[in-house]
Amino acid sequence: MLFKRIAVLHWSLLIGFALSVLALNTARADDVRPPVNSHADTYSEGEMVVEAGKVFGGTAKGLADAVHSVFQKYGEPNAYIKGEEASGAFVLGLRYGVGTLVMKNGASEKVYWQGPSAGWDFGGNAVKVFTLVYNLPDGSSIYQRFPGVEGSAYLIAGIGVNYQQRGNIILAPMRAGAGLRLGASVGYLKYTKSREWLPF
Image (cartoon, rainbow, N blue to C red; front, side, top):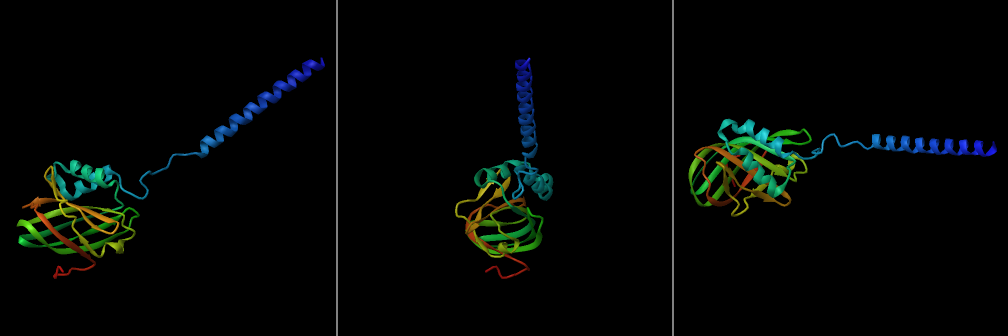
């Protein structure tokens, strides 16, 4: 009789312990939730294809390929600029643009850019521009000169892509439009809060 009571108590304790462990594991599993947004600080490739499509419309057939090539090189940006520009060159050139800087944290502000270029570069254009921006700590950090990265101009599926860099901040402007020109030019773009007609 005593043995039977000990056995029942033993099994009761084992079952109680097992249920406690199961309840604890279930609670822990509920506490570990996947992140709501895995791109909390940066934009995904899909987001950028959609936003760039709004800028270029139906003129950019190879837009997804162009965006993908930049993502392969630099990953996910934390801001972008959507705008338009006009430029012209006969060995020496000038470029003027205006757009809106949009950061992942929701901030946005107007931005202008202008700058000279030099090199084997001829022609003129009026284009839509979509620029992927990397490592931008805040909106005010865009207002400086960004030299072009020499030899980084590409034509990808009808979209002109080149790279500019100042310190850790990298810009990847993509252009599509009438008279698209893509030469082996070197120069810089100066980003400002208001229009400046002198590009230097």
